[in-house]
Image 1 (cartoon, each protein chain N blue to C red):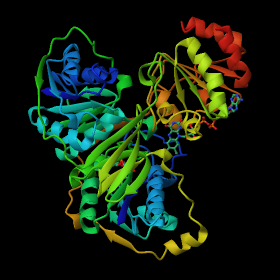
Image 2: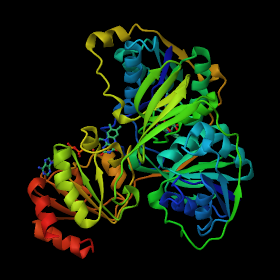
Image 3: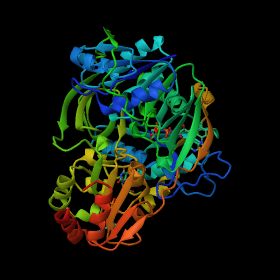
Image 4: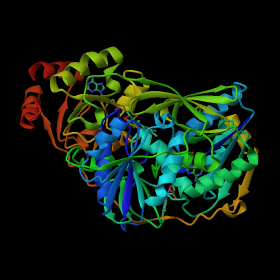
Length: 308
Length: 248
Ligand SMILES: Cc1cc2nc3c(=O)[nH]c(=O)nc-3n(C[C@H](O)[C@H](O)[C@H](O)COP(=O)(O)OP(=O)(O)OC[C@H]3O[C@@H](n4cnc5c(N)ncnc54)[C@H](O)[C@@H]3O)c2cc1C
Ligand SMILES: Cc1cc2nc3c(=O)[nH]c(=O)nc-3n(C[C@H](O)[C@H](O)[C@H](O)COP(=O)(O)OP(=O)(O)OC[C@H]3O[C@@H](n4cnc5c(N)ncnc54)[C@H](O)[C@@H]3O)c2cc1C
């Protein structure tokens, strides 16, 4: 049993998401190799991950921007030597891996939250309102991993060998034009310890900034948002937490002016502690909150910020 | 250029799913079913491309039970030109759906296949990518903007790090994210008109696709329930709680 993990592209360093996928791969019970689409330096960084015995580096420019048309043939070509191919369920993994699965004529097991046996996994369905135990009958496994539910493998201490691999290169059918990245000094949403999240009640972008940002600054927290807040343009799309946004599980999640729709809960209900501030005592968010405060956020949040 | 839009009949997004007591699945008896929300967005986008002159015909297709005809009629009422139901009472996995869609695409030769990025029941997020692989065509997943530029389509994608733009050679597969557009409601006259639009009935066997599942669901359980905690009286009490958690 040998598993190949397709690493989340992360410059010359290792993404937390990759470390979680390595843990899931180790639980399959065999050797773990990692495929890095990037520089040799990135390959070296991944060689340090505990539990990884080999790192494959594909540094062709065709693989630089996560284009599935180019990456899927590379990965499918390597899959011959493996019993399982895994990737973290990030937007990159979700884009590329099903394409690999189809090339291998395998049904992908999406977004696993637990390894139950060599071919048996748990995965959430219906926005996390049900947990299915599923068993694959395919000869090869293709799996995406929900990164919040697996411990991160240690980023250091390993001493994997590093090999370069070449693939078919560019398929010529797609081109990367650009990335409009949101620059921020804050912790990344999916790996933050504390998240302050705002909803529709914040009124507009300016008010969101005035109310949420100072609290997040005080706590050294990442900032999240409900879909309603993103749709209304208060904050960029990559702030969205939920079924169709990011899945987070911080130590503390503070939901401010968020009602607690099932699609939002799907993204944050595995947080260790949930704190909710809402003026409606019947808001569904209070049914999952460990600590709730009923009040007008425009008075209580500034007061909270000043008292911390 | 034709646009093919696969639409799936799923539990309505406002309904809270209940797990069956015997752990065999989610109880869908007497539950309101609707078109997958992402697929409504896909239909809308296809219609807008037709209305702008970039596309000529919008064909909705569903793989599912006889009742999925309702879902297709919804797509027709929104404005799709015709529909195809590939009827099966079995649960069909994304890989098999993708194989059926590939066969239909080979007959219809659409310039774009526009799917939802995920179905809200199974949350697999696979079908579009698999179809693109089987067709050996490029894919623009999680789209929040779609623009036809000659023989290419430019797709802006919602990715973890922001918004990414890719340029794809047509024909291409596009999967929709929530912010691509706001789907229209079907008007009453259009709902009436949809009843007489063509809806072809097919089966997976017509396309030579084996739909036997590769994945068996052995058990479905409720997730662990969170207990509601404590409502604190004021900000001072909240500060004390946060301090106790080591947060402040
Ligand atoms: C297919 C699909 C996918 C979706 N995916 C997601 C997703 O990934 N993430 C997500 O978040 N949503 C998602 N949604 C949307 C979701 O259903 C809700 O519409 C959304 O989460 C609501 O956002 P909200 O809580 O900010 O707004 P609302 O539901 O409008 O809640 C606002 C809350 O603020 C409170 N409030 C108002 N004023 C104040 C005040 N002054 N002080 C304190 N409290 C106040 C109100 O009492 C209310 O509870 C999805 C929906 C669909 C159909
Ligand atoms: C034993 C078993 C029982 C199951 N029971 C159920 C059940 O009771 N109810 C249920 O809904 N599912 C059930 N499933 C899951 C079902 O078979 C499919 O795997 C799943 O519904 C496919 O959708 P997805 O969410 O995985 O696809 P995704 O890849 O998330 O869908 C993305 C997009 O693909 C398109 N698409 C997907 N499926 C279709 C389709 N059938 N027709 C047209 N377009 C489509 C749509 O545009 C959709 O937005 C069961 C599966 C198994 C193995």
